[in-house]
Image (cartoon, rainbow, N blue to C red; front, side, top):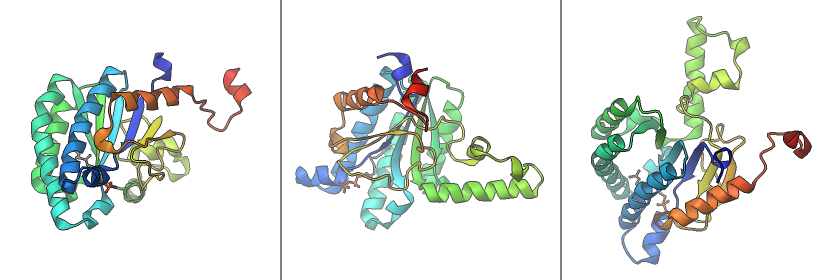
Length: 241
Ligand code: FPP
């Protein structure tokens, strides 16, 4: 695989934990536990395959509407994951970036996230974006408010705002836009995930349920991406010229 064909940023909608649990006749939370194992696997495979940025949709603004028990189990799982993975982040020089309204998360989780972000902020080889309490619409609303405040303070000229300057107000400001968005479990929608940033992303729909997502499926997604022609609105002839 040539470096130019490797997506610089892969974003994943990790779907199907619940269905995996149902298929295996175990509680839903066991599906999430297996999902967390798939998270660890995927970070490793991404690093090994030259991907520089990986963003994972771990908890959406809409996920608060799930049964209370499932939400608190997910938060506990996240807390454990963050505590356990901290040494790994350092060992493998992974910069962690949280995207989403993270101030609305439980304080103990905010503290862990804050510590992980601070500790890893200078690593520049690989960035892991964790989308937590994330939704594209809330992100855009937050960004528009921040631009308006900056304009009121005389810090930006609204007439000069274009996408590149606007994206500096998005949660993903210090990551490139995704080249490839993967959704697992056969569902075919973007579910309010990185809608603006994915404007020119290639989309790969995997039939695999998230807990079963493995190296082979990850590589299949990258291979499919490599075979596609990204035209950004131009013609094939222009691209090849
Ligand atoms: C979707 O499956 C998955 C989620 C809502 C949460 C994602 C969480 C994990 C992968 C595990 C924890 C993550 C980290 C970072 C430790 P679903 O429950 O919607 O599945 P279903 O559609 O089959 O019911």
